[in-house]
Amino acid sequence: MATQTHHQLHFLLVPLMSQSHLIPFIDMAKLLAHHGMAVSIIITPLNAIRHNAIIDYAKHLNLNIQFISLKFPGTEVGLPEGCENMDSLPSPSLSPKFFDASNMLQEPLEKLLGESEIKPDCIVSDICLPWTSHSSLKFNIPRLIFHTVSCFCLLCSHNIERHKVVESITSSSEPFLVPDMPDWIEFTEPQLPMTRSNLSDGFRSRLATFKEAEDSAQGILVNTFEELEPRYVEEYKKVKKIWCIGPLFLTSNTFARDYNNKASNDHESLQWLDSKPPSSVVYVCFGSLSHLKTQQLMEIGLGLEASNYSFIWVIREGDHLTELEKWFEEYVFEEKVKGRGLIIRGWAPQISILSHSATGGFLTHCGWNSTLEGVSSGKPMITWPMFAEQFYNEKLLVEVLKIGVRVGVEMSVTWAEKQKVEAWVEKKKIKKAVEMVMDEGDEGEERRRKAKELGESAKKAVKQGGSSYLNTTWLIQHVMQLQVSHP
Image 1 (tube, rainbow, N blue to C red):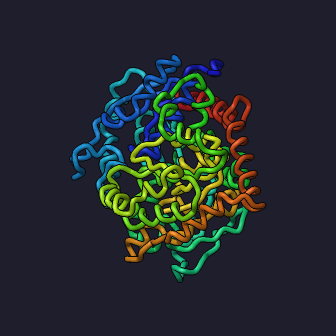
Image 2 (cartoon, one colour):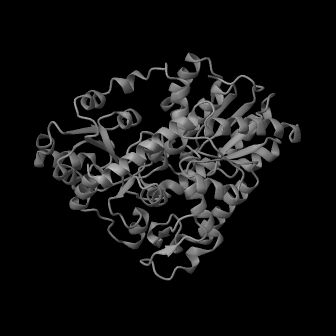
Image 3 (cartoon, rainbow, N blue to C red):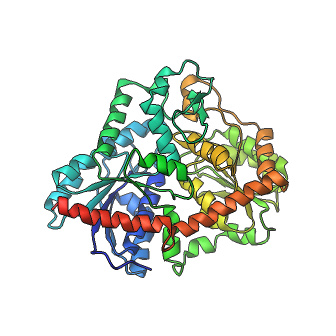
């Protein structure tokens, strides 16, 4: 299915070294390569090891994809040895140092570009790496920005910032209306990524740098599809030049149906799901960066037990796992849910689990990658946002798309920590949310119908002739045209 009608442009991808960013960047590399492009990905040594499957994938399918490995200067800014990915940080408080180290990649990348005889035709940079604007100008290379969020989120953020909503908030508990949105959208201050308490001069300066770097780019790539949020895509196009090219994880699956991921297909969870009736299992996973306290994890276990529904629960290795294992043993949890509950410690083949016919619902932290995977699988979701843009994603799922059920979180984890407030969800709320999303009545059936329709639309969008496929073609044509103005 590779499109060979284009000259083989060379795209240089520069992602933030975080799983939630690296994964869609790597999927984008597959997409561009399947359209006949040459792709180089800036990466660090330990991340290259974690993601080397893409190199095997490229060789298997004769695609032009390569890694360019740069040393990550983590120890130079005070990070522990081996912290090259945000999910390897021992504490979220080290995030500023991680960004400092990420910014220090500018010098080695520019040295590489200066010494290379052949420069890339286009740089696609992470929104979190504004220094790439300087690099592209220095070497006269067109640059695009990649956003790992939705157009709904981008429009919310743009309108809140443009109308200076945060500065005008008088009460953290009172909902406020986001101006100029296609739907009636309300938030409270503790649900926002940006609040009055973090509007320091330093934070403002960083936001200004991001905006300036974005404004200087030749366009924006968004990991979404037009049929998911048509009114928000239309409105954001009035603000920026954008191409919706997602869901990116689906594009590689569509192009490479014959590429067998044996580790996923043989996973115990899929064999376990084979024994369950259709739409009978709840899948529970909170992503790679979410941190829940032991007491909250225990409450999740009790809520899942009380719901009486079958479930697969993925628990991060190292995140209070020792304390949780002790509770599992003392409470005899796994014995109590034997036959209807499967606990996975560490990695799980999330896409395969969500796509399985036995999976009927998804309890998620509302990270955008997971949200897209749930949508594309046609599954209704239980929403448990924690930080960043996750409350925006919850609002999209629950109030706009109407395929989600809130578990009842009212504030971000970061806000609660700063204000010394406990962000707590009791087992009865978890039980109720599970029962609602799995409900076989009219409301539950309508939610499932809408979710299924969106899943079908997602798959059509990335196929030849679909909206995202066409946007990718137009993007490549745009970059070709930019070569005329960037000889």
